[in-house]
Amino acid sequence: MRSCDGGTPREEQHETTFPVAPGKSALLRRTELRYRFPRNTRGMMADHSLFMQAALREASKGRGYTSPNPAVGAVLVANGKIVATGYHERAGAPHAEVECLKSHSGSVPADATLYVTLEPCSTIGRTPACTEAIIRSGVRNVVVGATDPNPPHRGRGIRLLRAAGLTVHTGILTEECTALNEAFNYWVQTKRPFVIAKCGMTLDGRLTRAPREKQWITSVAARRHANLLRAQVDAILIGAGTLRLDNPRLTIRSARGAPQPWRVVLSRSGRVPENAHLFSDKFAHRTLLFRDHGLADVLKSLGEREVTSVLIEGGGNVLGQALDQKLIHRVHIYFAPLMSGGPVVAFSGKGASNTSDGVRLCDPQYEQIGRDIFLSAKTLYRHGSSEQHGETYRLESGSMDTQQELNK
Ligand SMILES: NC(=O)c1ccc[n+]([C@@H]2O[C@H](COP(=O)([O-])OP(=O)(O)OC[C@H]3O[C@@H](n4cnc5c(N)ncnc54)[C@H](OP(=O)(O)O)[C@@H]3O)[C@@H](O)[C@H]2O)c1
Image 1: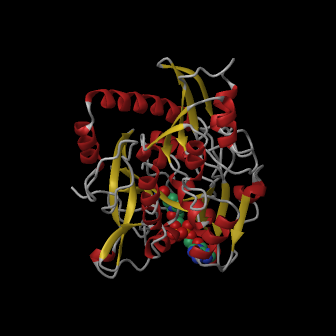
Image 2: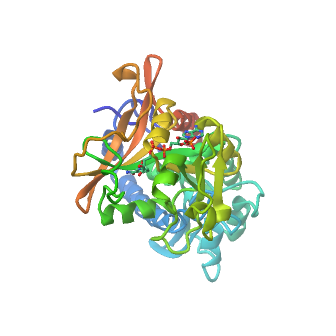
Image 3: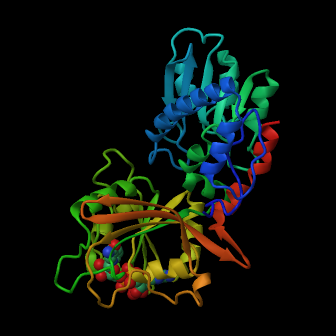
C-alpha cells in the first residue's frame, strides 16, 4: 500500500533511534519499532504514548479557539499518575505547559515528567517563553509530541531545555500531534491558509436539487456534522452564485462559544443583495467581499490577515477553480444516496487535461452519518514525474532532518 507521506518518513523517531526505511506505511514503521524495542523500553514507550494521548485530549479542547496559534495540550505525570493538566485556550492566553504547571499545587516532584503535544516555545511573544517557565518549575523530564513547524524556531525549545540539563524525549505520537494542527502547520510555513473543500453531493456529483425544491441534498445529521467542522476554521468562502440562490448564514450553530469565522464572498459582477444574511445579520462585520481577484490572490490576502484555514463551501464554480488551480489540501464530502442529474456539477471548471494530472485522495476516512457517507481525505498532486501532497506535506517532510538531529 502506498504511504500517504509521499514516501517520506516524518515521525516515529524516539530517544532511542532506529533506522526506518523510507516509503513504509506508518503502521509498518510502528510495528517495526515495537518489535525492536527491548522489553522495558517498550513498556516505557507505551506509557509515553498513553500520557501523550491524554495531552492530545487536553489539546483538542482548544481546537477552533486558538487561531492563529496552534492547539496544544500538556499533562504532568508523577509516580505514574497524571497530577496536572492544561491546554492553550485562545491566542494571547497562557500556553498549555504554563497552564498545566500552574494547575499543580505545591512543588513539582523530582521524578515528574511533563508531556506536551508541541515543542515548547523559546521566544517571548504574546506570552513569555515556555522553556523558561519549564526550567524554573523544576521539571527535569519533558516528552514532546511534535517539533515546532516554524523553521526559525524548530528544535530551539528542545535544545534550550537540554542545555539546561533537562531530559527531553521526542517523537511520541508525532503523527497525531502534527495532524492536530494541520492548518496551522501549513500557514506558519507559507503564510497561506490551509484549504478544505466541502460539499454535499449526490452520487452522480450534483450539488443542487431541482429548482423550487429545498436546497438540501444531505440529511439533517450530515448538516449538523458539517456545521461542527465550520467551528474549526478561520474562514468560510463561497461564490456569489451561492449567495444569490441560497442566502446562507454561514454561522456556527452547533459549537457554543466558538468564534464566528470570517465569511468570504467572491463576486466579479458585484451583484450581491444588500439584505443578504451575510451583510445584514449580527456578524455582518465578519463578512468580506472580494471583487475581481483570482482565488489564489484571495487566499494569499486572507493568509496575511492571519487566517490559517479556509473552508470552501461552494458552489460548483468556485470549487472547480480551487480544484483546477490545485489549491485544495483536504476534502470534506458528504455523499447522499441520490442521483439527480442536472446542470450544477460539484467541481465544475476546466478539469484535468489527463487523469494522472487530476488530484488523488490519500488516507481517506469514511464515516456513515445519518443516511449519508462522509469522506475526509488529503489531496495528492503530481509534480512533474513525482507525486506529492499539496504543499503542506512537502513542507512538513522538511522537518525530518531536524527531528533526526534532535534524537541524537
Ligand atoms: N450541495 C452543496 O454543498 C452546495 C454548496 C454550495 C452551493 N451549492 C449550490 O451551488 C449553486 C451555485 O453554484 P454556482 O457554481 O452557480 O456558483 P458559485 O460558485 O457559488 O458562484 C459563482 C459566482 O462566484 C463569483 N466568482 C467565482 N469565482 C470568482 C473569482 N475568482 N473572483 C470573483 N468572483 C468570482 C462569480 O459571481 P458574479 O456572478 O457575481 O460575478 C460567479 O458567478 C447553488 O444552487 C447552490 O445551492 C451547493
